[in-house]
Length: 69
Image (cartoon, rainbow, N blue to C red; front, side, top):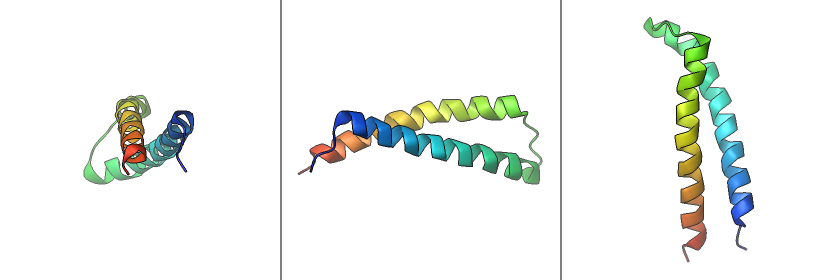
């Protein structure tokens, strides 16, 4: 059964949102261990850049795999 484009996008967005929350939480805990001082605002902004990249990557890969016989 083939997944619709809309459901591919919903899956990709859900995956990215969950990953974003985990990444930000991990950064808040791990950065200080390495002596990195980053404000919450900067952490969120850096994460947002990666969210856009990850969302596009997930969607494109899902569509490619959906076409693969």
